[in-house]
Image 1 (cartoon, rainbow, N blue to C red):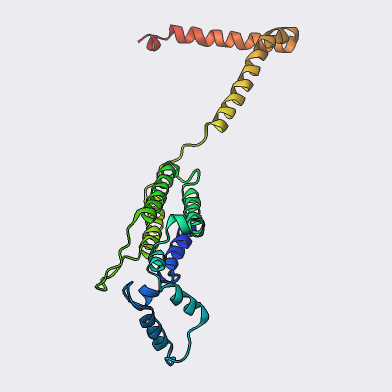
Image 2 (image 1 turned 180 degrees about the vertical axis):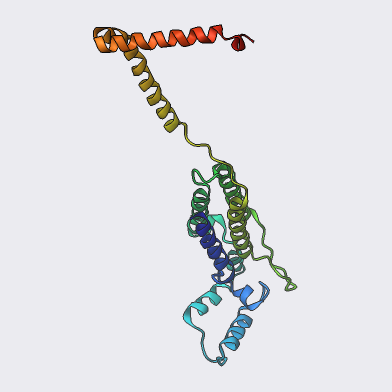
Amino acid sequence: LLTVLLHLHTAYILYCLTVHWPPNLFTSLRLPLTTPTERIRSILLERAGLKSDEGLPRPLDELLARLGSAEIRTAYVRCTMEHYALFIVPGVLLQYIREALVLGLLTVENSGRTRLRTTGILVLVIAAFAEAWTVATVQISMPQDNKPVTMWHDVLYVARHILFLVLSILLYALPATLVPPPLSPLLMEMRANVDSLARRVTLLKYLGPAILRDENLREASANWWTKQKTVGKWVREDEGVWR
């Protein structure tokens, strides 16, 4: 079951890294962040096979209109905590919570990896704080010579999913420790045996008087003790035993 969970988790992370990539206009068109809006519009029309007098879909027109501002372009690369926290945090936080649940299942009780659960969760917490700190403090410049700009949203997306992928595989690949059986069933069994033995020992003190009251049992007991006395005498008189 844990192997199936790991395979499904790995396939999902690889899907996020290869297929379900977050849209980024500048990365997709391989354009610098300072590319003029009209240049972006003409490239989009050319990619779509449309003429220059034809319009783009309304969502693209609205996006290009907003990208006319340098501040919006900066926010497009890195959503700041002040303006977009409510938009960013839930999605990213849910990803970390999902990963914490996966790690919890991979290190479930009796899996031999329970000792690694705290380490895995601690790594996720540190990564979440590091990502939040990076988003809040990183400086994004607007170069004038068309130099490439680091797309922090894409970088953090890749780093986050690579961490999820490596961390889950690493926790599963580390050798599992043998889990000792719980003590409760053993203690209960030992207690039952001791109680049974105590009851038998208690019955012994009543067994002697009961035997003496019955003539047949009294005679059998006397014969048994006489036989044991004879055997004991033979053993004591045997020179081989003395040696």
